[in-house]
Structures are given as structure tokens and as C-alpha cells.
Image (cartoon, rainbow, N blue to C red):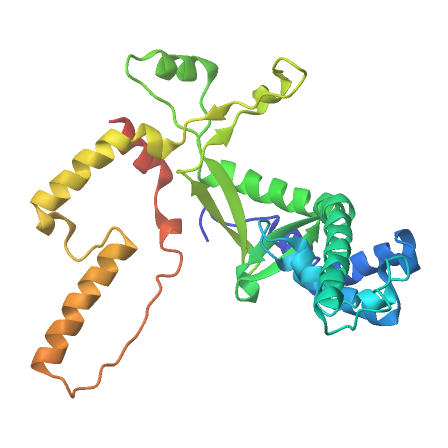
Length: 308
């Protein structure tokens, strides 16, 4: 493991075990609904059973998806006594009956959408933090916010001691004062791994938010957030020159490929050549993984090489 022995590894592993699956969070939200939402508002037993099944899907769904579409599955408008009943003269299968049923469905969807946006999702985000757990095959887990904060503190302390190097005030002032010097910012994500460990992921393409910007306010009282330029934006011009050098001299990279598009291009050429030379020959595939590949990098020596 990188950086030698980690004394807090056992504590980190015990905290990781406190994560719960989306089904458990859904059961918790169902208990909240039964205490807060009037029973007759959502209808009878059938609708409440459908809501219970759909809550786990709501918790696990991407943030941009309409929650009403998920919560409405299996729900019956006929169980909601507060809705305007169907016209007596209009058969359920007729045009008037279908239009009335669509209106009832829209009313119920609006109620469920309001319930999700105003109660369920804000409450779940306030109490839990979601993250992928590679120890469970990349499954999505939820940790109580207090537990997640402790996990992040332990992991961040580890990263600071083994991967990052702090700068003194004078050294930082010297670097920032150099002409043409641009400092990029990146967001750090700590992804849990098997064996009570974690993988630090620095997002070099996404702008970071300055923590000091939260005190600045715009006209009208709204908080103004200052977005710091990401590292990749600061390195855009060197990337262009390096890409140009790679195009002019492909042999510099050897067998390395820089993008998924390049992998597909290389695979198409290989497949075409294979069909031409040995169309009936079977292919056998294997995969390898280097254990602790990046953990063995001497961070101080790498930083010294960059400074040079």
C-alpha cells in the first residue's frame, strides 16, 4: 500500500461497513411518508404498496430524471377519493373517459413530483451521501452524512500525508508571483475500494468552487460562487502541442493510446486484418491489472521533475 502502514485503516474499514443499499433508504423514506403524508392523499393499500416498491428506484435514479415517472408506476387514480370522479355518462374506454383519466393521472403525477422534490429527495440528500463502492462491484451505497464526513477526513488526511505536499506561504507567494504562472484547481473524489482502502480521483476537467467565494454576495442577496479554472484548462496549449507531436511522430507513444476513440480505431484495423488473413481462426482474450500501479510512484521525485 502506498505510503507505508496506515494506522486508521481498521477504523476506515469499520466505517465503510455502515453503508446501506438503496433498498434500505427506500424503506426509510416509506416510514417517513407514513408519518408525514396523510394516508388518504395517496389512496388505499395498493397505492401505498406501489409507492414502497418505487421509492428504491427513486433513490437510485439519476438526478435529471423526472421522479413522478418513477413513483407513478402501478398507482391507481381510482383509490384517491379527493380526485374529481369520472363523469357518470362517460364510459371509461370512451374519449371523454380517457381524457378525464389522463387529467387524473396528471394530477397524481404533480402530487408525487411535489412530494419527491419538496420532501423525499431533499431529506435523503441531507441525511445520506451516495457513492460507488468498488468493494461491492461498483454498487451504489449510502452512508449517513456523519459517517461519510469521518470517512472523508480519514482518507483526506492519508492523501495529504502520502500524495500531496504543502507549500509555505512564502513559497506559494513566489509561485503565484512568477510571470506566466497559472495555477489550476481540481476536485478530489475519494472512492472506496476493497480491503478498507480508497482510490483518490482528481477531476482535472471540472471547475472547482472556491470555499472563500461563499461569503461574497451579488446584488439581491444571492451567494456568488467563484469557479476556479480546472487544471486541464490551464494545460490546454501544451496539450495541443503534445497532440501535434504525437500525430507527427506516432512512434513516440509506442503502443499507448490516448482515448477510447483511438482504441476503437485500432480495434477496427485489427479486426479487418484478422478477417482477411485468418477468417476462421478463433480469438482468445485476456486481461491483466497491475496491483498498486500508481501507489509505487515516488511523489516527491515526480514533483521535483516537474519543478525542474
